[in-house]
Length: 192
Image (cartoon, rainbow, N blue to C red; front, side, top):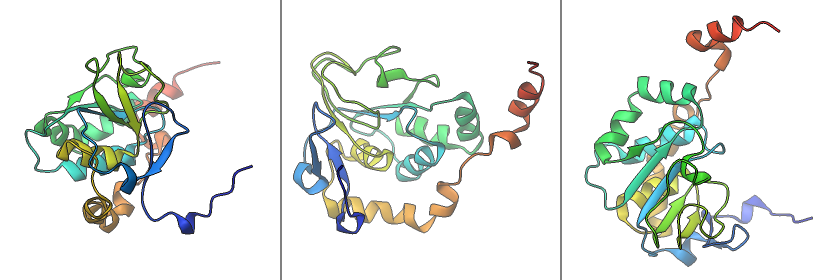
């Protein structure tokens, strides 16, 4: 059993290429060049996409290729209605259809040899693309990397994340699937 006292964690932890068990603090990997960023996978909920959108507001011509793939059509619909897809589009993101996308490498892959910051669940060799080097981190960290083209310093991260902390109650609000009328109607029509 491994015990971690979260009071001792003062900065993001990043899984380094290409092993999810090779983790380092943000300070240890700060400055590493990033070519592409993937924000998606089943582990990334709607609040993470809202946070990434907030960090990308007003940004154009980001220096990396940014991929965005929400896990479900419900997330996609809600993010579109809230205007987040517009923010991603303005920033230059490529929005994928909801699902696994780059996480499994089954819908698309990053450029061969790219260094990637990903929110996916694994970074095994060649999973996101051939000969890639993949870091794993949060959607918030990934969004900041997409703006900078590199992994930020701890101070840069903490400064940027301040805007998220101010609005956290709205940003990280979960969807109540049973209250989304379009999807509730379909679910209610299913007979067993």
